[in-house]
Image 1: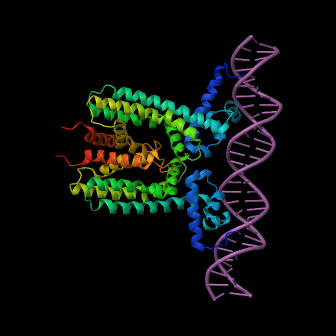
Image 2: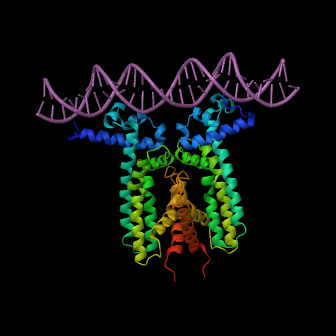
Image 3: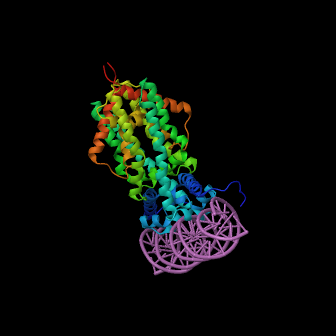
Length: 213
Length: 213
DNA sequence: CAATGAATGCAACGATCGTTGTAAATCAAT
DNA sequence: ATTGATTTACAACGATCGTTGCATTCATTG
């Protein structure tokens, strides 16, 4: 019989397993992470994991990856809406947006640890999983971001022939170095360093993308 | 067994082991990579590996990481010297330099696959190894690159208060997206895409860093 | 209370792995 | 050809792992 009606405790166990798996997969990577350590992290018996996930370790990993991406995307879409929809002062809004952009690094450390593992496991994962993750996660966010930069260009706030390129350049000037230097958030950076990286990145961006004349 | 083509000397065995280990560590990651598979890749018995590396798997990994970094640094320093020492046409030299910068991605795929693994293993590696790698590799290159950008600023070719930041912004505008989108070179990008990314990156950079007026 | 279904503890399996010991085979140099 | 170093094949060890079956416990519901 299917899973028509679940008791209260049932879904919670599943949730705990997924949360624990995300933490352990992110910390240890797919191969090093053992079902036993995941079970301990989730405070669950190993047997229960197999009761919930027929596919075992690999299915658990797939679930963790896809469900995690949605969480991040939601946060990022909200961020775009909050800082880039109604722009009053472009520079300060961009600075605020850039700060918000790297916030998930600290807010969802487990997920980004997992992303690091994903990049390393690229050769050992089913391509459809990679594709599903990219589409539900990074690409989805980026598409919305590019649209918003197109909006900024249409409003005459920036000068950009190619809005996608403009969005890409902004992210790389303001976010990439923070991401890289902190190992995707694994080693947090001093606030002062982050502030400087973002401030100088936004300045460089505006020098390049502010309308001329 | 079969392959009695030519007998290798002592140092050559060691070389073969390191080369094989680099390939397998890069492809499979530290945990998944087995001594057996490394031995097969290097066409050597597993016992020979232990004869050469007392520290076993972990020492082998350490050697592969540090010796690989030096190779890349040499290529990058040569590149800086070739394209940024005597600049005739800034834009075309920057474009050529950017192309050269990502060249090692395809020329030393094993090493960059290893770098991907390094980033994922950050939590399980001895900090002194990470530090040694950063210092012998990326940081060393970047320091020279920053000096060269300081030179460009001193010559009046670009306008940059902070040469380090200027170098960083250049790399991120021209190289980072190629690196990211190709998974550190694991999935090669179409030449046309690379050309466009670099061209638009250099243009954006020059818009921001060309002297005003 | 009894019934039901989920969660657990436990043992066991086959597989893989890192590592070592040992003795035979192979090489380089005399 | 003898020597001495190096490489090899082979076996074995302890350990860990993914996974499953089974009997037991536990909480909820009728």
